[in-house]
Image (cartoon, rainbow, N blue to C red; front, side, top):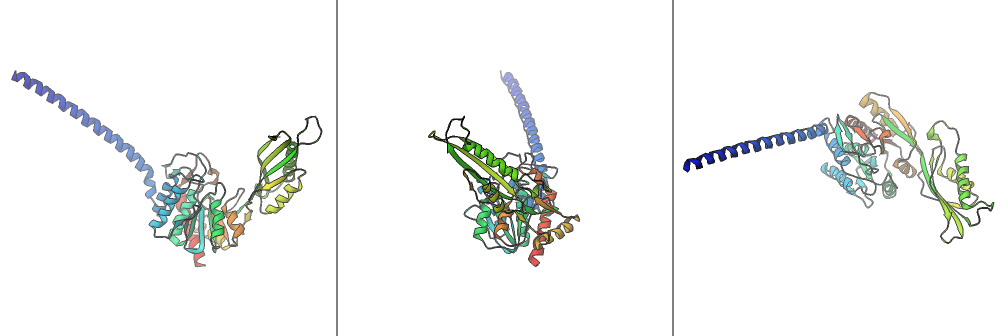
Length: 391
């Protein structure tokens, strides 16, 4: 009996030992697999710890990893604010959500915190950061934050640029004019943007009496179609490139009987991109001059801007880009509109727009930024800020 018990105990002990060994082997295998996964993740982010601007690279990664769609920028603003606090800079978030770090107003560096919607998975591969906003304009924003900390110049991260530009409008109303402005948008590290077209939008509204469709009189819908055709034809002219052309776009068109059944109403939302050779008033005058019925309710316009390549800011960029990369700087004009238009419409100081990244990737599903280019942009911005501060 005892011998039987001893045999069974031995077999149980052996089985237990084998089970424990299997469990240990499984745990080891799992640990190795986990380590492999962790090692892969670490390998991706190792690039953040390379080069001179390690803190800036980590800020960029954290900001791109923090959703900041227009109207919902609070979390990203807090990340940016913490960066300046960590570098002992005065900083606060103002009533509209702008991140403000005032200092030496020889230069104001400013870019926008917000992005357009879109899920672009955040990852780093071969020294390239992928993610929504990496180019437009979190890359420029973070390069400016790093340069502001390094040189002691003023900085503002504005909100709402992708929608109403509420941050920029508030800024020009709430602070004094700086000596110079560098606005942050992608231009490539070796390019600097000096011009943007302006923006005018409005809504055409017309009504007419409701009558039988056999009647020859033009109704409100026909009037709307004819009005827009005349306006578009007026600006359909041959020019040397899109930048010098007025681009006309109908955005929405709606028409039909009113609710009371007594009239026909037509509305057209329209947009104009206005080159610097014309003013907002020039375009508005043409549009209103083609009216035969109804009227246009205009929204707040954004004027075009074209800065001279001979300003102190432009010269500083040309020298800095040559110093950093030994290449000829590219002077750019953009067919869209940016917050620089708003700053130039209020402040009478030299300015330019600059930032790392390929603007063709703005809002794109494959938005990404080379970290080496990000570093080069910081080098350029530091050089520019030091030159302008010395001047």
